[in-house]
Length: 455
Image (cartoon, rainbow, N blue to C red; front, top):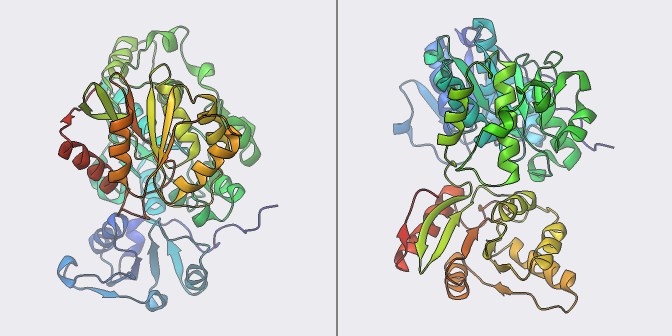
């Protein structure tokens, strides 16, 4: 039984025009918060108040916008934009939703896109959503259907709405964003599902429900789903809404496309989901097969997703810092099968289960060495030793990323791969995954490595 109820019912979508003349609050001053401030001002809001627990520099705020450290001050606003990182299950979020109308930038942007008749594809999944959404946008554009790629990828939807025009909007949507969008009726794609963000959602079951909520109002046969995700999707959506890639891909196309820069079975699945989603949007894949295959062949791995970044002494160093779950580490190891790998893993502990990953590492102990960093590294190391039951395993525990990289350099033979795939977020030691990746690269440069940017 799911221990948590649905998100606060007063959270709803509205169009930007409805902000005119109203007092607008913005909770959180990150990218999404700044986009909400701009949208409110452009719509003619009577006032805008930003609330953030971190000090907001007045110089970063447009004229007439005020700031407060106390979220309770937003209760006096007519509408409040809640930033994605703030869980609606928090007590202060529930209290605010009881006193005023709470919405999100994603919900407002999608409502506006629907009103304008903009074709929209929402792509989500525990892993693979960035690659799949970026690839879908690239294929559509190459085949004569210009697309704008935005959302969780780093570009808020509210920022791109003014320039979308008649182009297709391809949206990467996180579970945080999906939970607040109950009325989307466009096309969707689901890449994979595994436990994630339990600190925000509270349980795996709530995470799945929240993540799939974005598709709850989609029509029949409108959501492409991978084989891995289908069983869980059927528990939260009507099976009639779901489409298997094979049902819409032209015969022979899947075998023809060659994602040469996207290694691994998981990326092959991402490609098929992306192409099937393009078909649901009306793209004639058979007629534009040459354009489609060329776009897939040219598409390169996005930064921080199995991306080679340096070489040293015949060893390739790979940045997979967006890997924040054990499942994503397993996918990375599968993509590198056949090559000796030194895995650097560990990060913020959010209570995920690492026993399955440990079992795989022990089973592959002849080809995979493990170097751990705090905090989850200690748990993973314990799980590996327990699973090994006395068998020899190549395991090194370290106290920092610098120590881990030094150990990996010393222990990896020429021809091997050092894979930084944390299997956890990096917030315990770094600002975010980008700072983790930059630190990794700097350590390698300091060690004499040569930076690379392609396979």
